[in-house]
Length: 394
Ligand SMILES: Cc1ncc(COP(=O)(O)O)c(C=O)c1O
Image (cartoon, rainbow, N blue to C red; front, side):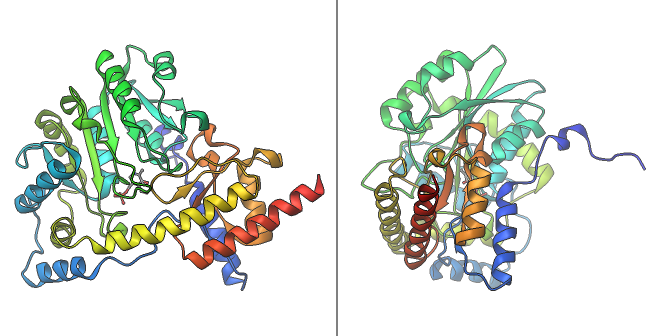
């Protein structure tokens, strides 16, 4: 038999998060206690009013294909939300497309807008699928090293060294996964000038736009002067409303870009889940108290873990958003895979090795606090024990 795997798929690995999860499950099956700091989804159920709206939609027969762009009434609700909360004016008829989660929006954009050899500036560390999707689209991912000193945000000086005439698009992920940090207005303004100067498209992945603490404010790139015409804004219901399994997200972009992206979207999925769109519409238009409660609880855990790591003397940027911390473990002289494995095997704490998010994430771990406060406290205690044991061995 010939090898049916094309070269482009050989470049796309299985994610290491899967490896960690499988190992954690195996340890648990053997009766060991495991604290789950590896999970990237809220540990809350979808709010009742949202579930009820989807059930009603099912009862009302919203079970067929919808428009490729999504139901018009839902797109109108999205347009209203984008204007009210993000300062983005998008025509619901031509500038919004409902997608199968934010992920499919990112995929539809990259697969349809990139030409073979187009270069894409990608954050490193950054959300894992960006690089794989650029490769799948036969583009060239160009890793932009982000540093703790810059709060893991793009710095224009560094971007200037990496941009070439082949650069077509920049991926912006603020608030950021895996770092939990976010770009300031000033940094975004600098970035917007850079993108206009080099005539780049921006894919602004705003999956965590509402999971923000300390009164910080998320600024959407598309709301800055001169940026709407070159920005593809991706948003999602997964994190904000604990709807990861629903697979509903959306993209807002200039009509001419949506016209390109919708052809990838219609070819791959046709439309997002019909009745799910009605649940998501309720999420946007109904009461927001579940979101506020979730944020309060995340905030408690964030403070516990951040302060705990600082007290242990482990360098870590103060997380401002999302539900991740990204501590620096270089002191211990193990690479991030070795450290994560050691921590899981010996202390029962599952985390994600930082190198999973790009070479520049090496020497870090991603810790997610999408697990109970009690588990956060216990996980912190175990990390403390691990660190004390390793330091005693030196
Ligand atoms: C930065 C980022 N973008 C997009 C996604 C995909 O989210 P969705 O569930 O909406 O596809 C995730 C999920 O973890 C994410 O972290």
